[in-house]
Image 1 (cartoon, rainbow, N blue to C red):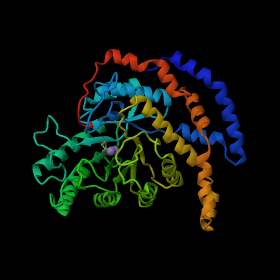
Image 2: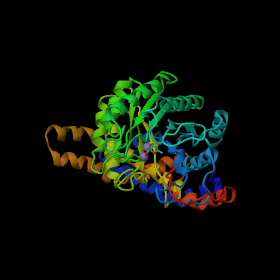
Image 3: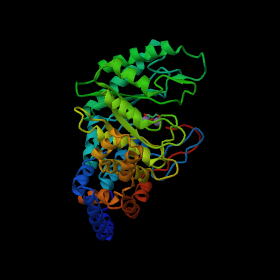
Length: 425
Ligand code: LRH
Ligand code: MN
Ligand code: MN
């Protein structure tokens, strides 16, 4: 963790300016009929989960350049996640990936308690071979032509849910690399039938009525010609086939560059099938860039849909980050992203929804668009920073983190990990 004195000094240096900025913003929002304290309350209550795999350095097919003090195992990862939450106050939960984070559930719970964290959705991994799995996933997993491979993949998912149940998780996210690289390589219909059959087995194994199964679509990669769960339409079909506890997970980077993601979000909300998000940003494909780093307006438009639907009964999507960091300190990137997600939420809370509905009814496209822009243009940083200060987090998390020397400290304990070529995970 960051030393309490360092955090306090960092906050003291910035507090007077923050209070002045907050008061000034409060006055300006009051003129628009908005109570700044009410917005701050909602922002303070907001949390986004951190992906355990995000605290390590990622990599590409070409190379991985490890950073200093990379986590050695899930317990180091939880330490790093604890720092992110300490400084931002916005990331109370961690999403684990199995087998990468496999460990004794009581040890996981003890570490979670020590770091002040809980667990969000569990992720299963049948997109790479496991040491303890005799059969290979080279040609697929849940949709494999061989029933024995499918069974092995189903069993893995059942195991992940069992582990999740022991550590207080309430959801399983399934993302697959299954697909094909060449036209004709697979019968796309038969492959999807096999996928559904396997996924129904997983659905039957959900530990309780309060558990949800999230299926995650992705347009391509690692399969480059076809992917079994390639888009939200297929994802919706799966959720419909499986039943009410199955919902769709939207990873923002898993769409073609021009796709209207906020509209996908609206459609899934309308039909009760929005399970959750993997927030990140992208310019070309599954870039896994920091959230809001390329198109913050799109992130805001997604949150505009979420705020619009907030009063829908039973509406409770999971909010998680999913990023890969190659040139930044992962802790800094994840803190930035958590704050960007909060910012988009705060801006969406500022939308004058009554005015917007009026402009929509009157077909006043210009004013409708400007109503959204007006909220988006508002610098809500004082609201976010005040929410952080009031909960004992950092006014400026990046500055406090750099002053705290955490990375150098863990680098002294954690051996330098190997770099080298290839392999994203
Ligand atoms: C696939 C994905 C999925 C995986 C994670 C490591 O691209 O987005 O969520 O579990 O990356
Ligand atoms: Mn994802
Ligand atoms: Mn991805």
